[in-house]
Amino acid sequence: MSSRERILGRVRRALADVPPDERPYEESVPREYLRRHGERTAEQTVELLAANLADYRAVVHRCAGDEVPDLVAWLLAAHGAREVLVPPGLPPWWLAAADAVRIPDRAADTAARLDRVDSVVTGCAVAIAETGTIVLDGSPDQGRRRISLVPDHHICVVRVPDQVVASVPQALERLDPARPLTWISGPSATSDIELDRVEGVHGPRKLEVVLWGSAGRGTAG
Image 1 (cartoon, rainbow, N blue to C red):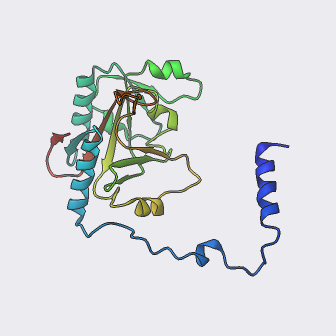
Image 2 (image 1 turned 30 degrees about the vertical axis):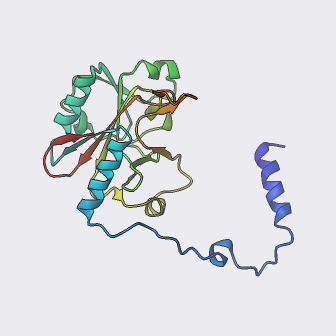
């Protein structure tokens, strides 16, 4: 018997005495908590996202229209990236101006091979303003979870305002719980008992977020 079968068996036994006409949990428990804190315009929500991303030590960039290729190329060059990991569904034009060698996401690649790749560029599923969180769900423009966790430098392109929501409850409405969700709030970091911060322990040391759609180009954070 597998672990899955054992767990499901315990669930069935626990539910054995539940009357068939009992109301589902979703209906019987009122959920009256706030879905967001305060009222904001779309522009204000994007500004809050940028501020919270920067607070988590992500580097925030803004670009409009067709500026994505030039900005991504500049970020890769500034990092000294010789190779860039590319999800299968990443829009090719995002990397049209980049000199780095494109490395496709291959199932056969080991963690050691991915660790030698300098950077990865992905899209995102949704960005949460109140928490400064980027969520990836394994869609074609984001690739498998491991490609955003192993390389040392992650560039994530967020379409604004379409992919930006105010709160976690609003984000959950857009996400499929059956997909492999990765929630990212700043670069990977941890602290020892003396509170010395160490970055890059279980993910990229540097997270750069491109807010694509904001007016003009600039950098914050």
